[in-house]
Image (cartoon, rainbow, N blue to C red):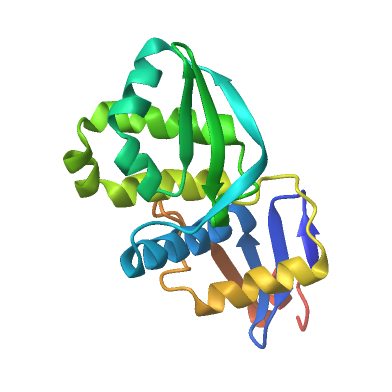
Length: 188
């Protein structure tokens, strides 16, 4: 039916009103798709950037990028070291093509540094995917068309665990017609 304050999708079904947190729902959809891709292949599908993004980085971030190249590539990111304090992002996971490359890479490098060596990253890969999905999901105040809202709702229907985001919060709620009638004192 529409969008409320650029955050919620308002829809209806046979039961009544459905209210969807569009960021939380899209985050779960992106996360589940990335998990499926990673399980089925050697890494996430990637999309080269038309223009590489240069990032002024600390020496520690550059060192992490160098030591964790294999893990970074598996996550669908091509990251080159362009100098002692400069990184170049050349590609991102296709599902995250709209993400902010700098914010995504900084968060990923921070988590890689925290987890340590690549073999330890494997054990926490789903946490990394969750973080990446958050960066690649629609943000508040992004106006969606009716077609985009409907596509998101259809994706939710096809996505496992779409009733909660990656952090465990609900993605939607529903208010039945009887509850709406009571709210407005209809039939009394």
